[in-house]
Length: 558
Image 1 (spheres, rainbow, N blue to C red):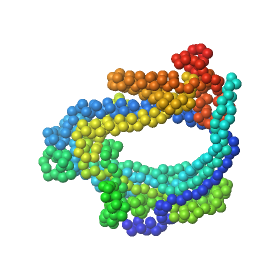
Image 2: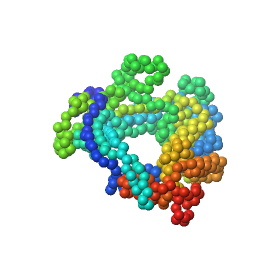
Image 3: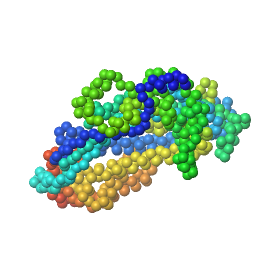
């Protein structure tokens, strides 16, 4: 502790938490705001990438969902040995065939998780998470434009009125505060005055207990899970493989750690007492500050001057800029005209953190009762519960059964809960895919000579649903095949075709022309390319029927 205090006095500055703000420059650009030249090409490529990536993400998500379903179904159909029933002794468990699934609930958890870089060890924690924050400037851009109109001409001479943004005012502002990630200031409008050092000596990381030992007592009941019965016969001890904790402990919230004298919690504040009236659970865990006696000799303290400063349980390292770096930064400010740009925010900034400062705190998962489901292994003549991975069915993470849940749960309940989590993640990705289907449906519309953007809201929703269900059905058919959910796949395909057909019949007609050229013109318009890049074939509405040539061409082969 004495060494820590000596290091604290030699710091360049202390940890400040007040944010600060500075006003940047303002620009006025007269005329249309368009992306031409290299900028326009990059914008078009960016739009194309945004259109391609979501289906790839959906495909990966559905593969993970399929793999997880197969793995969980296999576990549900397997013979699972219950460690709390006392039918099998600890010695007999060793003789079980490799890969046998075991399940048990334990209220006796002997573990410790540690961070070797800071020499911090927390007993009773199955996982220890280091959350790092960085003092960084963030650039905020705001733009206000007028709406202008112009006449654009197609190749056949037909014209159309088009609105566009013009006479724009762009303003830059900057805010400096603690953030969970680093921000590259190289592309800022004023990088010299708002320079962000990119030092990252202690990145965020999660540690797990390497030697977690669980004791499974015979006949343990859910209503007695919080009562230790160490003297009861029939107890089985097993070591928990660290890979079992790769996803943390399900349903166990993380608790922030603060180190205080003798580990005594400080008196609750008025707001804490007020919110506790509504049943809010306190999430902070207090540990004796004496546990930090070895931190002054840790690598983080020696090499990067990290010390414990409290203020919410933070370890802090100040940024110390070299003389050459300061001179270069002043020169950059001189070139951009901000060297003598003094503002009120600079005075307030004296109580703010310095860009480049780094701080971190710890959070733990320390349940009192856990239920585990994994395969039985052997390690150093002791029982060990390890994850079981099915080979040849997708990615390894989804095919692995190594479950650790907070509280007392049966094996079936744990498998159902994991399946629910997998389904919820897949539904989230599908929801994002529907947002992607909105612009893609408009591209499909112009390819078929239809303008969904000028149609009613109902028609636009029908077009998006048509694209969404069609793609989803195709992915399901490719991944699941005909063995699982054939009826659902056929139904999704049917809905996609119905919605797509109705939208195509009801949508407003657009100019005739080549379908691929119409798609290019729409993508270029989204990329804010100039009119010369996207000259349509015609603005005269096509008279072709649905089911004829795409885009209303002269023949089906054109």
